[in-house]
Amino acid sequence: MGKEINFEFALKRLEEIAAKMEEGKLPLDESVKLYEEGVKLSKYCSWKLSNVDQKVETVNQMEFSEETAAKMECCQEDNSLSQENESSSNRKKKAKAEEKKIEEENVDLPFFISEEEIYHS
Image (cartoon, rainbow, N blue to C red; front, side, top):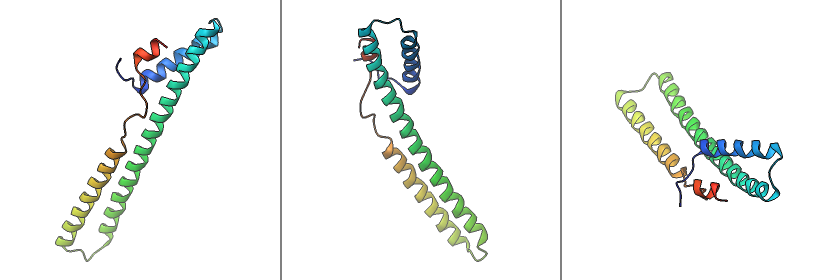
């Protein structure tokens, strides 16, 4: 089995397929094979973009939480050094928990498309 493809390869191949099909010069059987390949690649690209979108949203939420906590600390005049250290420690723990959550959400691709499968379909 060939190596797993990446998003950039899949998108480039999808563009090649679209260009070939738009020419309208392919035999029917080849058109159907390319269409099937294109559907697989399209689903892969959509899945990958959705996964990236979820990661970006998680990171944005994490940054917002840290930023909000930092602003709240600046506004409080009564904080002692020990309270600041504890709060900093809590933020670090929260950031690590968020990082772990991001890593856990980085699930493997639910299906694999190899270059070999693409070129021999």
